[in-house]
Length: 306
Image (cartoon, rainbow, N blue to C red; front, side, top):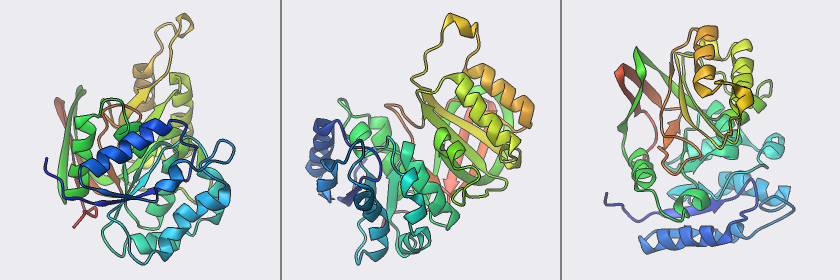
């Protein structure tokens, strides 16, 4: 699809970008497409395992509230770990108010979920989608990922379609979620939004099915899952099953969660730590329909680029 040149402002509130060549490749690709990429100095910034010390990474987020001119797109360099330790010092109300002042796309996933969900609690919609290094800097760029990124950022209404296990579902609600480990880690904190009648979309990486089940049971037993209209599972990659599992896999987890919660659970969305990923506006209105094995999720009410 034809894309209008945009300004990308890079932020790095989490882990150090250990794959520097991939990040530089991503910057070059964006520039070659006519985009303007700024704040690139955060790519090389490092303190211990983090993309700079806490004060530097905190400024990446709090500084957005003081920006005179916001860019088109605020893009996270990578995930990893580091955002959680910043949460008490982030002025989410001020940042959310600034982001709502004009259509601007704040995009990332993984550890970045810890930034996105508190912003959602303040009413600011952000996009759970590709990041600089792992996606735009992939050895082979995914056309699927890039196409869905621009569709989400420029379409006031868009529909995602995929195949799933046969069911019959028709629900509407607020789309929210992101990385499951981050959602579970935020339970009991002031930063997790209380979403009623939502469509919770989850993904994760390097988590064995039993760990995923444990996190989902925690969300179920705390009352979060029973308050949702539906659960949609994205990519759960990097887990290694062994003979000890004896047939216990992710399908076993999904079956149990359906039984425990009574909430419809739809599998198979290409979303998360995967070469192919859709981009989801967290906080948009969603209409989820499943007829047989065909699923659609129609999204609306999110900000789009001018």
